[in-house]
Length: 208
Ligand code: URA
Image (cartoon, rainbow, N blue to C red; front, side, top):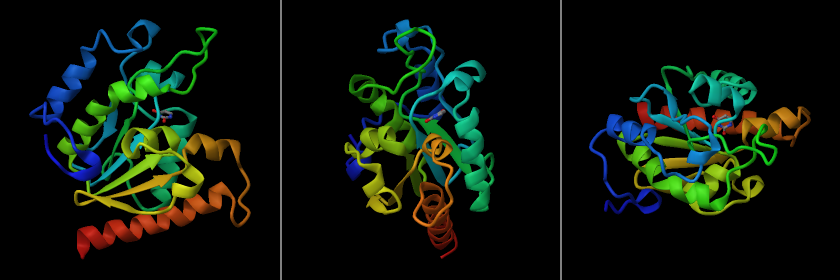
């Protein structure tokens, strides 16, 4: 067990490839019978910035990569606004690794507590093996997984330091897609403030 605050983990896997292989081979996870695919990560495994989302949606389920649908396109734009290259500067993963199907079996729903808990040890192992300096938690599901608390409107934009990592909750891009206003104080305008702060911290940590 490595004792590093929020990121305390089992040290079960010796490489990122081992975690990815274990995840790809899951057969008894709570969403195994959902008939949806395992979707894990994209980006640069050497990146110092890690983004943790919620769960794959329909596009991600088809393409096998996180954040490639409408929310992902907005996430890439947000990153680019902070001068981050989404492929080179960032590694992107989720809190839950299969799309939870909706009640009608077609659409999708938010992951439940049991699903978030089940995948959490894998998320923590990914954090350990990527070893990022900065972690962004997009929305309440990622906050629940990593911080074990929710309340994104209060948590967003504030740094939490743990085990040498700097963690910031931010709004989920899907929330911004539903709230298009750019008025001062709107979710979009707060996101731009957060991105500037993230850039500032990243530069400070990497370049001194
Ligand atoms: N939303 C997420 O949180 N993750 C994805 O991969 C896609 C949409």
